[in-house]
Amino acid sequence: MLKISNIQQNSLADKCGFKPGDIVLKINGCEINDIVDYLYYSKEEKLTIEYLRDGKIYKIGLINKKLKPLGIEFKYEKVKRCVNKCIFCFIDQLPKGMRKTLYIKDDDTALSILSGNYITLTNLTEKDFERIVKFHLSPLKISVHTTNPTLRKFILKNPRAALILDQIEFLAKHNIEFDVQIVLMKGINDGFELDRTISDLSKFYPNIRSIAVVPVGLTKYREGLYPLEPFSKDDAKKVLNQISVWQRKFKKEFGTKLVFASDEFYIKAQEDIPGCEFYEDFRQIENGVGLLALFRRQFLGALKKLKPDYNLKKHVTLITGVSAYDFMKDLIKVFNRKFPNVKVDIVKIVNNFFGHTITVAGLLTGKDIIDQLQNVNIGDYILIPSCALNYENKFLDDVHIDELKKRFKCPVYPVENHGRKLLYYLLKGGEKG
Image (cartoon, rainbow, N blue to C red):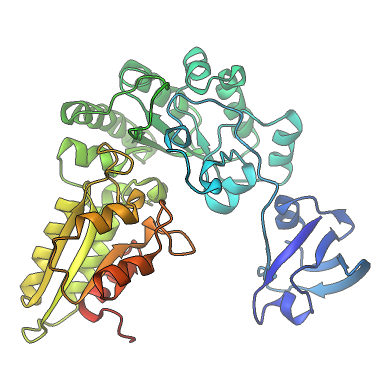
């Protein structure tokens, strides 16, 4: 059974009288134990839903002709926890004293479908795999890292990790599609092992839709953890060259590049970010694969439609991480050709909280931003990447965005990871329109 947390206004569920707090028991006679059950059984046109309200069981019949979502939202509480002890786990690299939710390690099939989270398959039973097939939970997001059974068992510190190829073969045979992630570690699963993994995975095409290779994230809080080192510029170049060989091979054989390096490898190698056409359908954009290319196209495409304005004058402070700094500088140079009197100061925030090896904007903290803006002439307002904030507008260190507003006595606007949104805030600030 599932407790309803919210009903979307004017939705079918709203019109049928469902309320937050109602507990969904059955749909068309089938018990609802979790969100996966709900998603599967609620797809029918004719539905009979049994639910519990104030201790009484009610039953309602409804017709959903267009098979639209009913508008029922649930608080997902039965999250399957991770049973691995990965040598690179980012959560193990968090300092003590942060909010409790940050230390939760999920490895949940439902979250893979609902939110695009990556799962390792190590905590799934035979019954779980049968359920994936029955409900056709596809596409899945799978963290593979290596197909070498012995090496994967070592990396994940879990004997069941060695079963990965058999598990993927089972999914492929039952027409389940999946996108794969490889977190690459220097001297562990790179080089020959990366070639082996890519080769093994390519045998499951077309069920395997894409492979993303991302560098391991290393904070300064690694005392007592397995020794890992970051990729250097030369290391990153080697990875890109290695992947490009596979891309040419797959493009010829499959008509798709199939395997892609994350943007971070291009930044580490100090190589240009490819154009959008390189990334095909952006299947792993949330993994940082092609994110900058799409952002650039969105920004420049929207900018191209605007007429120059030499009268617009303002001063904006734009916050970014170390990795995106040069990228942002290039965009602002183009922007200033049309809006030369809009001064944009791009401030590169060094991550002192997690350590200087962490360079992405999404892991910036409020304290680092405040500390490093102390001697900066802020101007009219501050723009910060919204990916650094949670739903409460708090950074990872629990600093609220309002603390920045109070400290610098100016508006602070979180900007979504979309080029057109950035352009809007550069020109309009908080104006509506």
